[in-house]
Length: 229
Length: 406
View 1 (tube, each protein chain N blue to C red):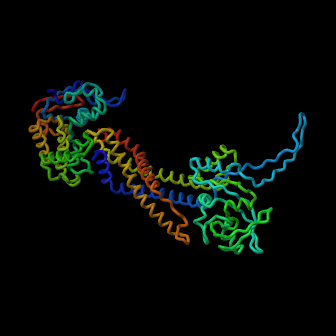
View 2: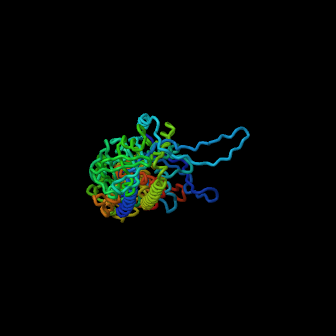
């Protein structure tokens, strides 16, 4: 089976000519399926940029990126959108739930955007995903009616509902207090173990990173550490 | 439910106050369009009915007699001439029965009435009045100039020596139903007719001048036995009168005058009314479109983060675009439904402000179903067009930038 991720000489630069700013300098990285990988590094090291490239939200300037065995270099916008919808899930630092929708509807959105219809079956799966994260009773509440930790759990349920092969989490505990953050990360680890979903977690928090299978450290757009925990 | 429609409805519900404001804007705009169009159409219909309801839309008559030269110049000769216009005698249209059949077969022609018309004096005792005699077949005459429904006394009948007169002429001469009236042409001894009915065409001059006779009576009186001087034509669409007149003239070689030629000022007035109505409607539509567009642009800016999340969750650019197009269409649809209701209410209120003695409104407001359907369809199209720019803007949002903006 192919790796969840394979990056070869991946670069990213903004601007052109004398104003060009290189953010990533030839990243090489292989992430096997089922791994819980932490990417750490100081601010401005290129962590979020790398995550955006892996998430197919942005295009690399050079190098090769394979996601779940698919070479993304040859994909057009529609193909990237399809691959993103089918194989990737996202958890952001800020939950980014749609305030117009209930928790269940938010969770069902990845399924609904893929199918083009909102179905009763999708909403049922969304409720199951919420229940798996112990927030099933909040299914009908709006994001404004629940706490920060609960929102992040709803966001994780949204990332998982489509049964993606790879979940990308950008500072998933960064906006939560220590206790709540620890609870949310426990959930991520549990889902990784139980469902064998690959997680790539960007974090500032070394304590969080130490609980992952592997830690990759970026400094100035280069990998300076890649070690198993 | 479709995902794009589902999201559009949720976004509209979320921005309740914005949605309500723009929906009220669309409602008011649509109401103005419905009311104003209805009012102008009603006034136009009323004006056309009052003016053209008592006259033929096309009048066919023989060509005017041209003066004939007394001397033709020979080779190398010059003749000085003084042009004297020929007198216009009352002449019959040759083969008028065939002409009537041919005109009836022209598409758009509703009714044809051969008539004899000419001047006469109406005499009763020592009183006399100059009148215009119109004589025709009882059924055909009424189909072109509806008189039967406008009788104020007696009844509509054109047989034997029957005569119908207007209310003003009846007053002037002191005649009523059953009385005898003598009609005298310019060069004859005159004939006696019995008044069978008195009509009111809503025009004092016409009521004072017209005497309507059976065709045979008019032919005898005006010395045109077996002939007709004119053929009156009524068309289904009054604005098609010119086309029908041209067709008759080219087919028959006769002169055919449409009301559009003989009532130029009325036509200019009607066209001016339509143009001003269209101009007002255009600006109302423009204002509504700008209102919808600006609200949706604000919505795109406010929801850029959410749009980024949707894109990250697998939503295509097309789906994001359709979410905003749906919002434009929904605002247009429901706003215009409300606008139709308000427009109908305004029309009813306006009609109730001034009424004729018979209870009919002085200013009728036309509100056909087609106007309502057209307004709703138009508003949906305007909503969609107004939403195109914000929708494209939303679809083009870079998801990375959009997510970062939250």
